[in-house]
Image 1 (cartoon, rainbow, N blue to C red):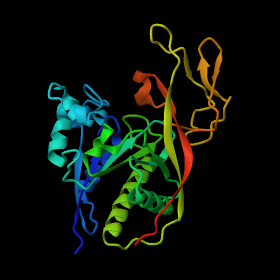
Image 2 (cartoon, rainbow, N blue to C red):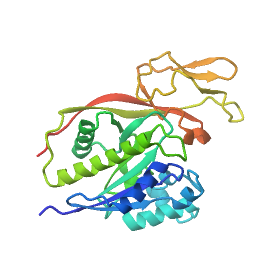
Image 3 (cartoon, rainbow, N blue to C red):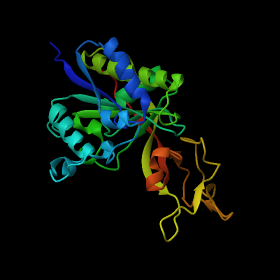
Image 4 (cartoon, rainbow, N blue to C red):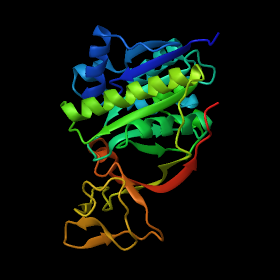
Length: 296
């Protein structure tokens, strides 16, 4: 008999990203139910949501590195919240939770993006299943670190993924974004249930995806203040090719900054509002093609 998986669906890791919080409310009224899955939900940062802020002291979605979880000198709100979540649903590295799905909004034009932090047959089959049934879905593999090194909340689980959907301004709801987030989450759960029961349908032999390369910060003056803003060429251009020599920054003095890469890359999180404090302008990814193992 196939054993059940313990699954945690998380919303509100960032308090001013409203879609996940709203879906949790709806799922409390009509609980998610899939064969062989025991599904719990969690509003990760309720205090930040009450205050309509991304976080109170520190970004909760960066608190789950092994080092920070083990540092009991960190006693701000999010640090303590992370330790509590890790104790309840982890512990990270030896988790009692088989899968964590963390729901996020972005102000960037990312569309419905599935973010995966590990590259194995499971992740590739999941990605293929989601993209097959949701053609507008974008697949982004963040592999710059190992799964355990990331500070993301979803890494509390044995497996963890993030659903990132935008554009949606902070602190509002958009029907189309909410519907895309609901659909992608339900497809992840549907895949997991079918995979556990060895009932996956035929999947595409290959998938088109993106893998993160680096991030680009705004140019700063000696006082650490921005000298430029994101060039209009990049606005709304997430996951579209950026060619070497194309403009990326519009300086306030009228100059233009150009992309100095040696290959076409694909911007992501373009002009994300949440990253203004860190002066990150956008990230860059490379398009890749991945083979997918046939279901058993």
